[in-house]
Image 1 (spheres, rainbow over the protein chains, first blue to last red):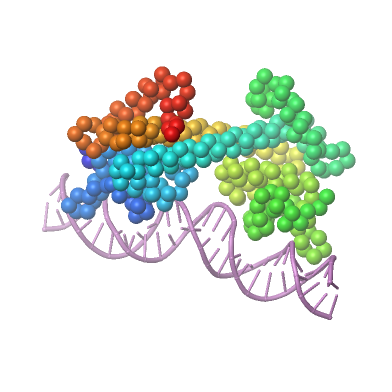
Image 2: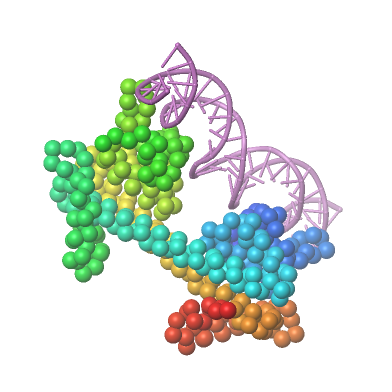
Length: 160
Length: 160
DNA sequence: GTTTGACTTAAACCTGAGTTCAAGTCGTAT
DNA sequence: ATACGACTTGAACTCAGGTTTAAGTCAAAC
């Protein structure tokens, strides 16, 4: 029913300093204290901690998380505002995922570049003849190969 | 054929201070200088800048990016090492994307929580009767609804 | 009854990733 | 020939997100 800061830290996979830091930054206004001033977390607090953790992992800055938590404590009048905030955050996160996918695509092109180079024993196979510079057509060459392949990993994974 | 730091900054969507900072941190050992000591970027340098940008957006710390760039300048002897590094980074990034997806799933559960609360006019519909605490079964209730829905967005998007 | 271990605070410190500043150097246009 | 704009440097500064330290409180175990 009640949990010390140490127990909560362990359950959340963090440490006590971080939780105290969050408290100082206004993220934990809901935690009770015992007579000695020690933080006394309750089961329901984990719902807040879950939200904090999610927003943190989504890249939301500490003070914005604090604003959201405080909306939560203001009762039913802020329900729409809380919904709208999460809706906006969903969009931000979807864009981030798309961006990550784009970086993955580029990383895979570079893996192909190095896979083929390793197989050839030299990077010069991708250079414009007579120069030390990568041929501008290299990326298109990869895209063409990619179109023919059944799956990306066959194309980019060195299996030695 | 040649580009000043300002032109490169504009092309890369950044600014000159950041590029100089990267140079100081060893990310741009490949840039030439003119007689006055001004940086003189060439077309081939954009291949490096693209890699730097990708790794940066993937969350790789500056100094690790520097290590990779330096491998690139050491010639064909480091091809396998470069491949292995990108392979490892691909894995890291795939895990990050998965993590983001998990946060998106949680965010959508919370959107549903608030959508239904807004529709009911109160959050108490999700509380254990007689308490101010969220019912532990709420998330499972959402998962059940989700299984029946054709698509998530019908379930979580308030359309007023 | 004192030691131990987990807690409390404020304040100082740390790291990463830039940003800003001061003082100076060029090449070109007027 | 001088003013302008874009460049150069090193050093100081900022900001977020913690982490560490010092000094103290408290309950339970021995």
